[in-house]
Length: 98
Image (tube, rainbow, N blue to C red):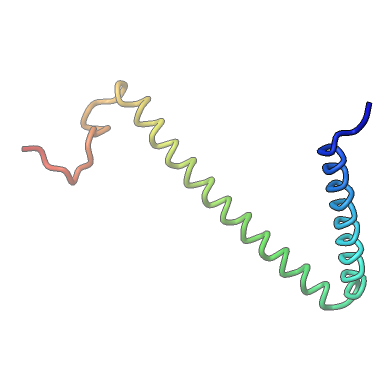
């Protein structure tokens, strides 16, 4: 059973991709080896840690806000029938009834 031209073409593309990945890995190894123990590398890593810390902090604030909104919506849904109407208003206080 012979290989079709399309299969051969896909195999060649896969080989080319593997060569590019190997070259890219070698380039990355050479570039990081130059600054492995230097102060520049440590400074770069410290900057990365700072960015990651800021992202974690932002995610925590977003998560807290979403939980607060969900808690308020859930409390309103659950407590509407249990508490008197004047304690859980159905509309905001700034909207007047006419």
